[in-house]
Length: 105
Image (cartoon, rainbow, N blue to C red; front, side, top):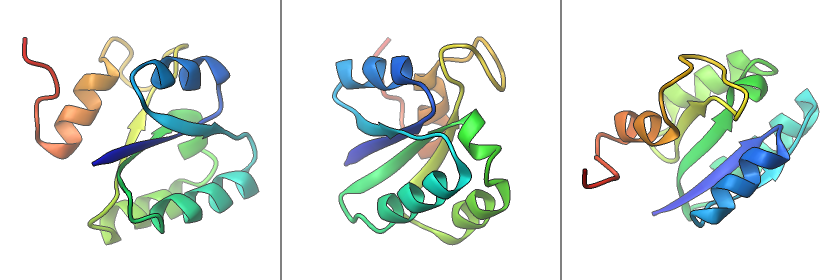
């Protein structure tokens, strides 16, 4: 199961790379749509992480994909500056989305 990240922030990408998650830094709506299309059509990806700012650029497309696709699971995450539900960790977002606890606390 591979994760992939779509982010608007280089710091978020660097942090994810530390745990083995690759991704791309993008900024505009057209870039979001293009990279999103590539990611959802890549059979290697099971979970697609996307920062809140990017979700805000194409909410209708992302909502439709979340409802329609079985794989990859699309998970909205805050970037390092916060976002929705500040204080919740990325691990918690992913665990909730896929129904599997990622850490053994």
